[in-house]
Image (tube, rainbow, N blue to C red):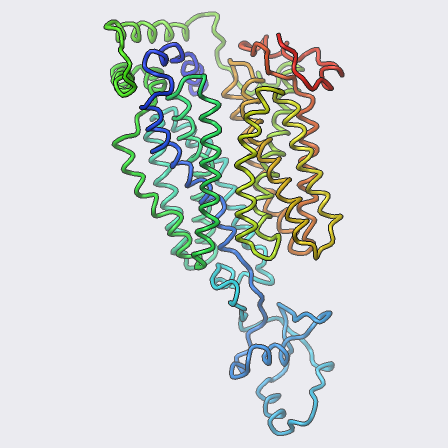
Length: 559
């Protein structure tokens, strides 16, 4: 409860009327943004998706020690049974191949009758075709046949860390500040990367992935929060777009790195160790003045704000410190006002019918967005003949999506763009079933449309949810919905694993989930041109008398 009380206090410590005096988006903020906060978005994409290129499964067959003097094709032809013309991956003939070779040398004209030979599982490991995949954990740890599910469990391990990390680093964010939390998170990320790289066996590797998962998406959210808290309200949507774009630039960089670095150990190190350079930021990254004031650290906050004003060439009045201190005291006193709600919790999110419905719909939509966006990102490299190109294209299409969504929501509102993007994404997924399996280009195009539109909807849901939840429980509401949505990522690796047998099955499932999430968003009330709810009572009344006309209205009404 103490955490919730503090969050309420931090929300009240509003600097929006002070920032114009020191500069809402001047030289100081631009330097912080371009040199520190935006580059800090890169580790999230690297850590979340480099694993896709460590777990490639090449062509493989049973290792037969007696036949190593033969060519690979002769070894397979002699020792591996076929099914529908395809060599078995997990079985070999159960015969004495030394004796077989002797018979071949003695009677070379005799044909070999394999129909009477029994088969058995691979007893001596596997051979791998390394002409395409030179290195992966599948090769090093023999994660095939009865262990084929293990790479999927590695993704589950990564995603399992996320919800724990979001909660822990969120708690730490409020306790020790944004700056220290970011560097603690960065250290955890680097340790996880090194652990993964030096793994002697699979479960050590999976533990390293869990450690990295603890920082995903916290390592992205913290610089995002710092960025938002340094700029004025008129520039926050612009900063949101920039952070999304830089995150995507990180994914594009990852596509290039994975293409150039095919060894999974070096890939781990290259996508984690260079971020040691970010410790230089310790000397330049400021603590959030908003957090400092909320903690009563007036002198530190005042020093940062004065430095901000000097860099932005803003003249502060001589009474600035006194005004700031008075504001802090006045705002602090509000926390002890008898009229201020106390001890707000989950029951307040679901305590009244309309709030309960909105919370459910927001959470379902967020869950669907999260699941489909990450699922398509996992699924992308398996499409087409070049996994690196497929991943690159699936990342590039996010760039125009974020910009388009940013422009759309201020003209057409949040509800319809969210709904249309999710439904279009789902329909594009399902339409891949109609494409012939050999038409890789058409399948890839539909996939890119789906990835582009789900990226746009993913951009919309966060601010939309923040506007729907009343101020009194906004942080709690967003945190709860995001946490439950994060749990959905534990499921998605198993969904994509289904594609190893039926390639289109995962994308059909994601299509259905996306369409369902889109229709959930259609029932939510529009927030554009509306006064946003502040109290629990206003939150219950907002959108309470929702009608069919409201549901079908495409252009938001101006209130």
